[in-house]
Image 1: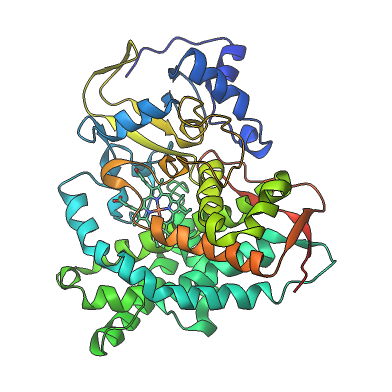
Image 2: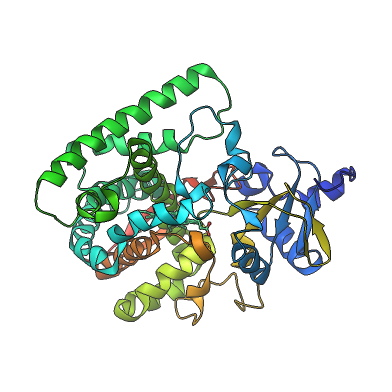
Length: 413
Ligand code: HEM
């Protein structure tokens, strides 16, 4: 561990970017700008999550993610979030929190289900669900975009991806939330409740998987997994881990990118007018820019497996290293005028929101497809959305997202 010297409170305020209040108040930008400029590799000796290193510049995040042997994702070392996953009661063995070779082997098993061809097969259903929901939105009334659009549309997307029974889709979000609750500590009641939900989820998905295996292959993730050779050998624990990762990976992230898009539209109405005028050219860029600026997962964490030098600082074996994607995505040396939502930005796709290297998001294409489809369908309806109250945000330095976005909407057709 790096040596612990207790800084004064003002120094801690400067260094501890993990404080939930910063994220809830949307007040983190100046702190990260300062760290990028003055101390891009900085050590915070004390926080709610213990001591940790912050990596805030684009190139350094890429360098750390590019060296997965020195910087481990393994849950045995503590995992991929700022709090230690190994302290959690029930362990879900997701390959996002494993190192190679085990990670590579499990990732290979999922990859065939998310190829461009597989995505193309889902595109029609995604568009239909999106259009159906947009057509139910009330005109001229205040409604909450998060609960009226982002959450139901995300649930519809996940149900569509798995071709999960439509009348049971309400189960998906709670299952995903329970899988994602990895910070509940040793509480036996909560852990038993979590285990119950996870087993219920696993049993239902197992039934559906077996049904799909017995039928000819069709365009949904579960059927494609059931018919992929690489899935044949998967034991029950791997199976549950794979399903949970797909469910959790695509839930809060998709939801918050759909909400982040609305915030950008209201902040940059001129850019939105351009997107609406030429969606065939600009919808993809608008989606990518939204994912860059929103950064739905603000950080991933690694643990140093040996002493290592970075920008003249010595990171010790066992230290927690936090990669702040939200900061890398605003690094002006890579993205000039970085806070601007610019659907025409040429290098927008270089953003770090999907991570980098061996763990880069497997659902990236799918996330882009979902968001681009939403933008295209809104443009088709000439939709305009305006803020109608205060935005409420989550107090989390991991899930960078929203509780409520009150809006009004108008459309010309
Ligand atoms: C991994 C972000 C959507 C499935 C990741 C990682 C990030 C991320 C940051 C870790 C990357 C790293 O450590 O370098 C996002 C964002 C999304 C999104 C911002 C939406 C805007 C999805 C969707 C799915 C998905 C829709 C699945 C249907 C996964 C999986 C991994 C992953 C399976 C693990 C990859 C590995 O460890 O090899 N995602 N994700 N994600 N994501 Fe996503």
